[in-house]
Image (tube, helix red, strand yellow):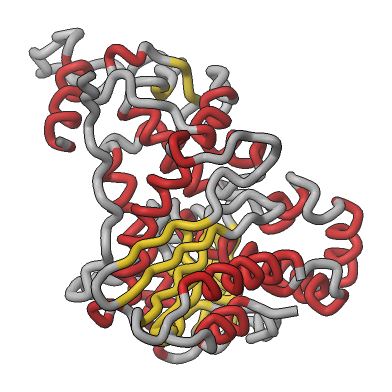
Length: 270
Length: 127
């Protein structure tokens, strides 16, 4: 029996030589050991003494969703902790002190949520970030992350997604089922975790919606979405809005251009 | 109840332990590290160990027969001078993490380490 499949690209290792900062402002804040809240287009980072203690993004499920989706924590228990805390970052500390969750589980979920939201908070943005000096964030009992570690991990994650499938369109668009025969690796087996994602693709949900529905980290969901896209199981839904009028001097109106682009991307990814 | 660091330090008390880490196998991120890493680099080690763990976790060949059991418990690699023991951590929330213990072959006791690492993985998330 011959099984032909495209090997999965290896997980990237951070390039130590790369010193490119994702946000010069963030680098400066880390250097001056600033405490406050950095608001960027796609998310918020809470800094205490120059370290990231909490991150939030509308594109990533928060700690509350991760903990309550599978019954790790009752929704009422989270609401109780949140009500007693001045903000979400402190709710987790309340949970830790109250002992309703094992320390390791809470630390793990906290770090998962921090790196997950941090990935989106540090995504390229079209507007400059704003920093508000604020004494609320502080180094508490839960683990914090150096700014440079979050930046490097975010770059590594971008590279990982790019290697899996270079087109980011599926990250944010509603997803539709596609014909796997058209994929880069037709017949690639769907793993149980990918199956859960695939089952929720309904033409309306985006990767973020699916992550929330599954109570799963958004970046983890993007990894499966890009793999499923590469294998041809899913595709970003074509945008419903009417295409913009072509520029007056454009002569290429070949309807196959999108297909060619996709083919080029796939070849580059090989 | 132990946190991540306490759990890794406990793993380092096993005879022959050289290094330990808690790694996410989807992203390849080390969420905690202690001791040495092969080649001196915990990040590379985490990314490579994550590849191995993902293959084991995601391919049905290595899975238990169902009945609510976690698909895979451990992955064990032995070489001329050391053992690598990867222990999947079964969390009640959605995650994809494992403990990675690097053991010197001379002093290490693989059977003991496997039992202890399994206990540590449970205590980490169950208290």
